Image 1 (spheres, rainbow, N blue to C red):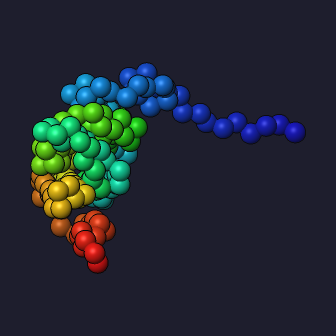
Image 2: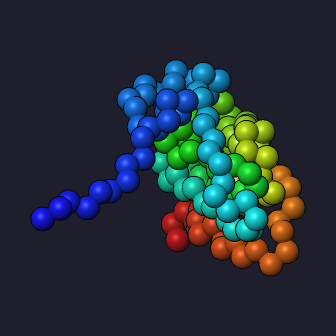
Length: 159
């Protein structure tokens, strides 16, 4: 019986996808890859959720934890997910305030992708008894595009 041929996608040597890649030492050293959007004529929302984001407090050196939700309406490019994971994880040993982490991630993605619209929600867990949630967006949401709620409950303390 003849075997059916299957198509195989070969790794693109220009991307981190498909090859071993070390965790970048810092966000500045991290490489974000983009790929062509196969549907540039269609408005749709792509969402990335990172419920275990970690950065360091620049004052105390203690870890700060957040739940990130990134929504965007692509134009010509998509962010390649492996490179995004490596970039976000590069903050683990990086000292930065909550606002700086959240906004700089959003700005870097906008610079790379030039999306029609992007929003990022950084839901930071409390330290010192106070959560800090940071929201940033760029562009204008196209008419008729459905964007679900980010689905992260506000911090309620004892409930």
